[in-house]
Amino acid sequence: MNILGVYDGHNTNAASIVDGKINRAVEEERFSRIKNHDGRIEELTAPFESVKYCIQDLDGKIDAIALALETPEDMQRRSINSYLRTITEDGYTDRLSCSEIKGREVDGYEMFMHPFEVQEKRINKIKKHLNEAGVETENIPFFHVNHHMAHVASVYYTNPHPEALIVSLDGRGDDLAGMVAIGKNGNIEILDEVNFIYSLGHLYSAITVACGFRAVRHEGKITGLAAYAEPHPQLYAEFEKLFKIVDGKWKGEFNKGLALGPYPDMKFGELINRIKESTEGVSREEMSATVQIFTEKMVIKYVEYYVKKYQIPHVLLAGGLFANVKVNQRVAEIDGVDTVYVHPAMSDAGIGVGAALMCYHHDHDFSGYSFNDAFFGPEYSVSEIEQALKEGKLNYFKPENIEEEVAQILADGKLVARFEGRLEYGPRALGNRSILYQTTDKTVNDWLNKHLTRTEFMPFAPITLYEERESCFLNTKGTEHTAQFMTITYDCTDQMKEQSPAVVHIDGTARPQLVSSDNNPNLYKILKKYHDLTGIPSLVNTSFNVHEEPIVCSPADAVKSFKHCHFDYMQLGPFLVKPS
Image (cartoon, rainbow, N blue to C red):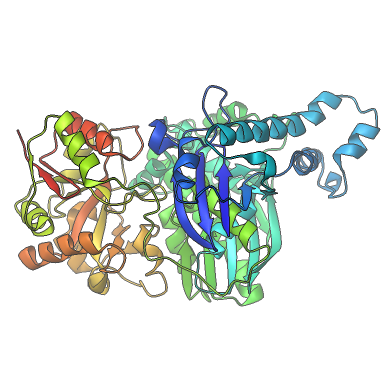
């Protein structure tokens, strides 16, 4: 059975699921070269090139199209209910429907119809671009999945445990900021939905803007800055007034007074102004530390409630908030939690996959499924790679053993940009579109970030031999699988701190990618040889891209970035590019 999954918001993406397994998955930004490509923007496409890529090997057979967004009717109902909840807790009802509102002559009818019309417009745009991409939508059934249910499905249906506790948290999607559910033998039971007015993700984004960065792009900088200060007591107390968790339910005053209607909803600019007022005189390091520690404690309290209540030791995480690797570490430390798995594309980049998997398992059993690698994007032939090298007029050759050659170059202290095989799925560079360097040079965070014109405060992440994980990191048990996708931090051992200072943060943690011969055999060969040469089982791994551009996708993208950044060497498939 072939199912096409589609999402049109920021991180617009598509995926193909074949018999319940991920076949292909990619974000539109990798083709358009527009960071966080948002298909809702009028002048940008909904998934187009990503859809064309995902249907290439389906021979025209698509059994269903799964959209990671609700129907206009369901969106209308949810938006009105959200609005009523901003007025009074007692105003919330699941029974208020679009037709009931329409039947009453309510003032502001057009405002109440806005969610319906916006959702309908999104769906029509998706269908238009699907048709242009070669998908005949007229005779294919559509399956709608709520945003957070798609997050939940993305992580549940890609994990090995038939029974698990699933948590989704982000800024907002389909008028929710989160969801908790239990997955059991393929069925998903919702335990709680978090109304968007209690969005912890929006708080984190508001602080990101207050610190001078961009929301929905630079939250990772806040995570990094947090280690440079202690939480500000008065600011922390202000946050405690905005959010509360009582018996596993979110409450508080976060968005009260800001919602002027169900859609457009909360005025984010007004929220930013309020946050800026409350943070006046507080350094950005203190702001970052405050929001990070507050976020960790709120998430722990929320997850801990359901872990204790249902006694389920396997916890699954998805949604943009769980791009926060420090939060994920804290979840893994909760008593009663044995394993934690974070979906590799935990952001909205993963909900095309989630919607398609939800569609498939609507009629099919589930007994567990996981993958060793997340390479679901495009791959290019040797002839395509060589053509790009020739067009770029680069000096290259084909070594007899490229992995040993790259390992030796790295051992000699040189930097190598690496492009090989299929593109990674999700936000992390996992070795196939990565820049590699030695971990012994602590100054690399300064000079390489400047070289790439990045303003990062988290250190570069390490790739580390899987079999050496316990000599490098503490308390990895139960999270080894998710650490293959660089989605969690660990406290580092003394050996790691001494050998690899370039990848250890000021707080003594690192966010590794554990590499084995199963999850990336050729990268493993490089790392294994490097370990043999140096005695160090880790290398720096950062994404191969120009600042504020997506990770490179094609050989032409790689050549462009290589020439722009003047790296020491580049591996492009079987070829090695030398300095001119």
